[in-house]
Length: 300
Image (cartoon, rainbow, N blue to C red):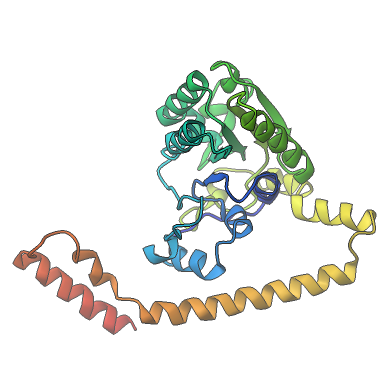
């Protein structure tokens, strides 16, 4: 696997939000929305394939209202606003939702998208996963705003802050925002206060910049055991159910990785990156392509 961004700790933000929307609504992810992607029907094989460095895993079927992973911070925000504007123009009743982190609220794309959505009253939901860390920069050092939600108020749209580790709170907030959007009342910004329990990406070492005691404190609020305990307390789930589900999920993931490895064997090697640049490849690129092909063959 290559570089990817684990979702651990932020599952409630994503599942709570997507569960409140229709399949025809537009889903615009950043790069950590794997839980939301699974909810939307992305296969584990495609997710693993993309994370292993193969663009084929990011292909979106024509009948899906989903966008692929977007790595440049906040660049996906204007796309979501454009989709909302198109839905408004066509009177389709569809809503667009865009996910981003706290660091994205300091980017120009975020502010341009917010202004455009507010002025044109597009049916767009801006969902900020405030996980307290913009890579290695803590929340308090990357924005002086008292809350991130108030950045939406500055553009004239309803904005609120919710407990991002409470799946029911997120579901309620997004349901209300979607209802407003479908009724023609424009965009909403939702700040989900959560925490990134793991690494920023597999290229990161958080022990270099954050205190382990802080992580342990937030582990007590982990949304998965929190909702699990709630379900058990309401007698909607048992300990045996949990054990069975975890075993089934592990088997599903293991099978998905086996299928991913088989799919990788069927795909061209990295030399294909040279295939769509020039109509006729110059000699120096031809030499590089051949070198990549030989190196890939040796690696396998």
